[in-house]
Length: 79
Image: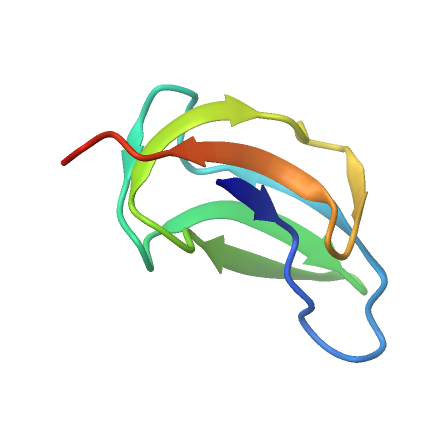
């Protein structure tokens, strides 16, 4: 599944990836914090929307991402 930057408020259009709390290949659980994103000089922690394998990180630390833009790909790992 495509893990996209969610809308954090009506005024926010972009966020900048601060750091990933998980690495490619790591298993993530739904609701687990996996990435920090800076919006309007505040850092928000974004949780995994589903459980699975963090297969690919698309947006790296420092990248600016539009709301709805692709952050990563999480694959079902059958667990």
